[in-house]
Image 1 (spheres, rainbow, N blue to C red):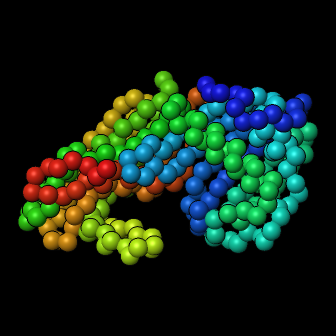
Image 2 (tube, one colour):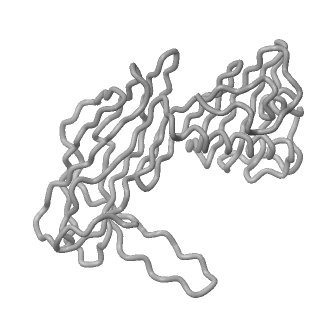
Image 3 (cartoon, helix red, strand yellow):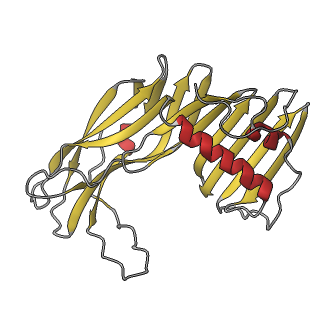
Amino acid sequence: MADKHDHGAGAAVAAPIEADITLTEGPGAVGAGFKLRGSVLTILLPRGEDGARAGLYQLNLDKHDTLVAALANLPASAVGPPAVMGMPAASVAVRVHGKEQHLVAPLPTADPHVDKILVELGRYENASKDKPVLAISLALEPMVPAKAKEPQTVTVRIATTGERGAEVSFNPRLLKLQAAAEPQPAPAGVTALPPEWDQVSAPLADSLPQTLKAGTTSDVKLTVNVSAPEYRWLRAVYDGNITFRAPDQVEDIRFGLSSKAVKLSAAPTGSRK
């Protein structure tokens, strides 16, 4: 499914290797998950910001791959300070020759071996995004006038893509619409603060979980009130568990998705670039 030799060569690993790597961003927030089973690397990306897809991806690795060699030679512990519970961390567990090695390192890491593994994983993550096993994204259809005094209906489109036979299940009640003011410009040399998003949609009263096959879409209508004069941007968000079912694989994990933000105006003006 992907290139096999672009990431350098390492010592061949004769025995089958299994590895599980989880990158956490904070309490209960998984930034990315990786599973290596023999030559197959499965990547779970549960974050899809600004309309980007999130989901499940797979690549085939060569036994001489740098990542495989680095995992097979995982040290017993990481260099540098220990990980702190609730803070960003990398958890790496490897099983080879019937033995398991496990370490946890804080992120960013001071350990060169862990850093090498993360660099290789990052390359594979980028290489996999065009060929998902199953992925999901959000979009707004259509845009809403900013100064409407009455509540209005906005359609959120959930789109999936992936391989035949894969499907995703989610709860539409976890969809929300958020609005934000125009961010204040930052002084020269200072990083601008991200916009502050307020929930402006009413929750769905009655909505059952939905299941979508790869390559299909579902439209969910939400009622929204964006009459506050300071609001300039609108986006859809989903924060909650989603179940991915692909051949020989089931993943149920908390996902964080957001659509591209659209600019509110008296008439549709398009999405923010």
